[in-house]
Image 1 (cartoon, helix red, strand yellow):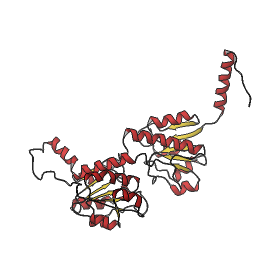
Image 2 (tube, rainbow, N blue to C red):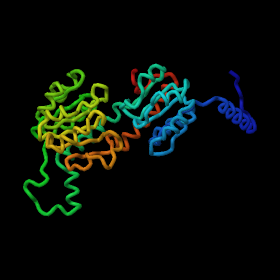
Image 3 (spheres, rainbow, N blue to C red):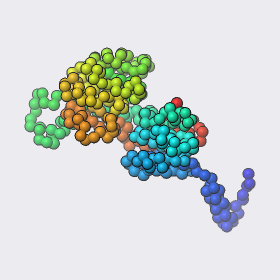
Image 4 (tube, rainbow, N blue to C red):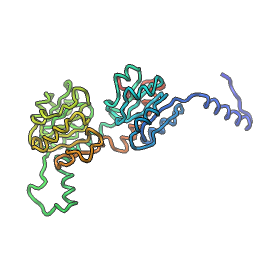
Length: 350
C-alpha cells in the first residue's frame, strides 16, 4: 500500500482529486428498487456507498416493461409483494442478480423454485410488522362484529333517528370462542390482544401443533372442521401455500355458526370469495372482515362491496409510520448484507 503524505493545500486538492478518481473507477453494484419506499431505507442504501440505486419513483406499481428494463444487469432487487418476480423477470436480470430483498413478510409473489435454482438469496421482513398487523386485525374484527362502518354511515346519511333496542346490534367477544387459523407470530399476537376482551376459549389449527405458542393463550389444537364448527369468531392468519389456497370455501363456511364472524388478514387467495359472498348473502355466517382480497385492489364493482355485513380494507395491516420505516431499513440491510456475502438480518431459507 502506498502512503501519501499531504503537506500543503495544493497537495490536499490533488489528493482529493486522486481519491475521487479511484472511487469513480470502481464499478458500483446496480440495485433496482421497484417503488418509493420510506426514506429511512433509502438513506441506509445511499450511505453504504457501494450501490448505483435506480428507483421507480412512484407510489404506483412499476409497469412490467419498466420492471424488465430496470432489473437488467442488476446485482440486487428491492421489490414489494405486488411485484410478480417470475422467470421472465429473473431472465431479464441475468446472472448478475444475487439478492432479492422483498418489502414483505409474505413471499408468494416470488418464483421461489426458480430463484433457488439460480442461487439467489432472498431477504424478507418478518417480525417487524407483527404488532401492527395484529392491531389492525383486532380493529377489523371489532369493526365488523360491532358494525362500525355501517353505524358511521347511518350517522352521515340521517339514518340515526333515536335510540332503538335492536338497531345496529352486533356480536361481542366476551364469553366467546375464537378460532385462529395459523398460530404463528401474527396469529399468536392477535390472540394475545383478544384475550383481555374476555374470550373464554381459543382454538387453533395449522400444519402442526404449536404447544409453546398455544400455552400463552391456553389454546387448543383442533382440526380445521372443528374450528369452523365451534368458533364464534374465525381469524385467518396463515401463509399462502398450495395447501391453504382456497381453503376457506363453501364447505368451510357451511360448518360455521350462523352468528359467526370471519376475518382474514393473511392472503386473499386463502378465501374463495364467491363462496364467501354466498355465505354472507344466504345468512350462513353473520359477517366478514377482509384486509386482503383477490385481486388487489378489489374492483369497485365487486359483489362483496355491495354487502353491509362485509368490511373490506385496502391491505393496510402493517400501515403505521414506524412499522413501514422499520421495514424499509430491514429491507436495505438485508440487501447490503446479501451483496457483501454476509449473514442477512432476516433471510428466507430456501
